[in-house]
Length: 250
Ligand SMILES: [Zn+2]
Image (cartoon, rainbow, N blue to C red; front, side):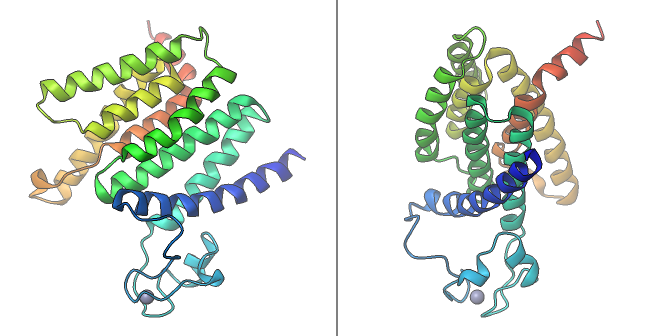
């Protein structure tokens, strides 16, 4: 039965992922989520049910629009698969628990921010504010030990990022700062610090790769959100193993 549930949750995750693409693409542009209905950004052709099956449509259409042959971004199927995969993984790790609901909300937030920050270099307040109540209620129903660790984590996450922003005179975006408030709420103090540490390493590796690929890479702005999201996902599931492994060296 667990196998059947995992597959169903994976498929549901694919559909949610497809919706999160729309949210991440439209909310930063202040567009409605429902109108206009999905269309090709190049020829404006309305997409039919056949174009909207997660992942399969992309593969079946070989990543092009049926109307004009416009290349569709690989980001869509990747985000769909990522959401489906993470939903299913969360179920396998947490089963039917309140924490599973926290995980689903947290994954949803992270995925939408990856889309938005990757495309627009923007983490909209609207998205953070939408998820705030879900995560607060989630942490009330499924608290960390001790329960106030959420609160301290949120303040520490926000405080450190805010300090970096002030000291680096704007080297850190406002969205990243508020984003870390929510991460602190979900992960607690120690894991938030670990997330920041891992995100900085991932960001640095991406920065070096981009710099080597484009010689004038100094001007390219690299969004930090995806690195933070990846680090937060790793820490959410493996934070304790990570810390134990690290402490094992001492
Ligand atoms: Zn088209």
